[in-house]
Length: 182
Image 1 (cartoon, one colour):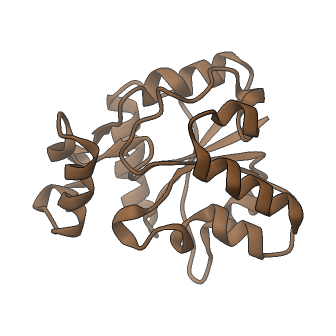
Image 2: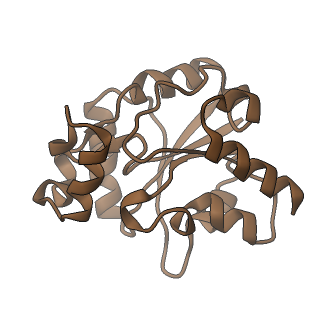
């Protein structure tokens, strides 16, 4: 199973977000806090390193999805992941004209774990939204609150993307039902 973990807002966040409530983190992005563009100072969201490591121990192949569009910016993300002890995995990014859905399908993700993009416009900005509307192979999507951390997700990668694994995550459960109906 290949698990693609979104980076910015899902598994890592700007340094000034550390120790702040989730709502404040979102407002920092909306308010253009200078730390948001200091890519090298990004830190893990709560539980992200441990959760991704658990998925890898559970047999998942881990890769990451960056919001950046250049190899140079993705290299900074790779350094941040390494600095904070994330499991090794390739960092993918969108080439010119590509969507996140294109990247997820091109690199054969079975599951995409991402945030709800609250600070940049919400659901229409998500990989899940694009995957649900474009033809192609099924990719399960787990959508969590932006900057909310990953500790609440199941440790077993086989449980990712299932409605039962998303207890307490009503938005995800509704999304998955909608996708199946299409």
